Image 1 (cartoon, rainbow, N blue to C red):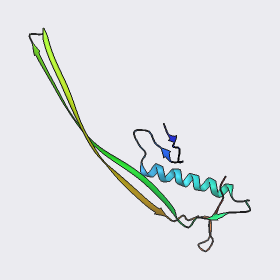
Image 2 (cartoon, helix red, strand yellow):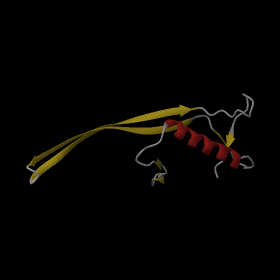
Image 3 (cartoon, rainbow, N blue to C red):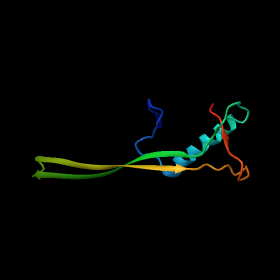
Length: 111
């Protein structure tokens, strides 16, 4: 399940999102903004787009043990160790509208 945070960030479910999906979502949002701004009096040029992603890599180790005596008495326990590291990835993208000629700028609106 995806949720929006208070600061407008898109929060993904616990399984995360692949980079290809994040870029596809960005491409879809840009296309929607371009379409929405076609007839707008004020439009914007997208010179560059900064996409910042955060990755968390976790290492989980679990130890289980059990002791049984004559099927009458048994005892057991487990312990779990978890460590992780966060990494930030920042991509700077320059959008290109393949419908336009190379000397034309892509104008976008905000709807």
